[in-house]
Amino acid sequence: MAGTMDILIREMTMEDYKQVYALWTEIKGFGIRSIDDSEQGVERFLRRNPTTSVVAVQNGRIIGNILCGHDGRTGCFYHVCVAKKYRNHGVGYRMVRAAMEALQKEGVSKISLVAFKSNQVGNAFWQGIGWQEREDLNCYEFVLNEENITRFVK
Ligand SMILES: CC(C)(COP(=O)(O)OP(=O)(O)OC[C@H]1O[C@@H](n2cnc3c(N)ncnc32)[C@H](O)[C@@H]1OP(=O)(O)O)[C@@H](O)C(=O)NCCC(=O)NCCS
Image 1 (spheres, rainbow, N blue to C red):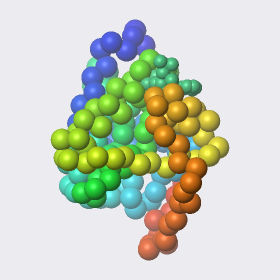
Image 2: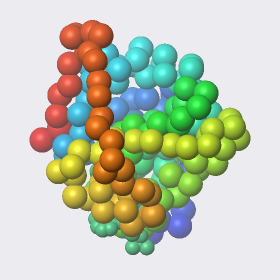
Image 3: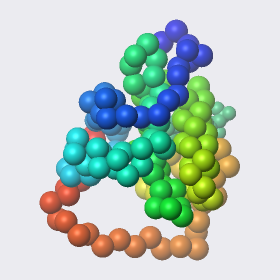
Image 4: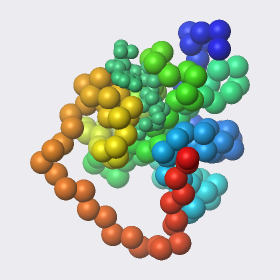
């Protein structure tokens, strides 16, 4: 890695899928879902949210990603990641800014995301860039499809 000045942040398209998926499989602790994160799953997500997900690219190689969408009201980030050797050079922050600007263009006023309490690096990042941790909320979910199995990257 010569530096990070030449890293471009741009919108993610389906052409990026294979490289993005390969990157996810390198991120320790990531949960990859058999349906949501499959090629068809991500295609469905990007069709609904065509302008808000981003990749970080150096010399044609994808080294960072945020899957970002919204429901017309709240924006949501998934799979925020930077390849290990490119971390701590502001790439994550630049991707967050780009996704935030894309959401603002869509008229969205707020973003929420989930971080495992045990994810020290992730929580330090969100706190470091000034995001508000909500301690007054419980997070609820209801599984609609048991076949959407999560595999954690070791
Ligand atoms: C979280 C992640 C995307 C951050 O990407 P990054 O490119 O390293 O982050 P940046 O260099 O843009 O950091 C921006 C700020 O976040 C904070 N920060 C980032 N990593 C940090 C760490 N390990 N410890 C403490 N603060 C940290 C700092 O305030 C930093 O600002 P500074 O460089 O001026 O000090 C990256 O560490 C990663 O991919 N981690 C594994 C996946 C993950 O945990 N994702 C989050 C899921 S919720």
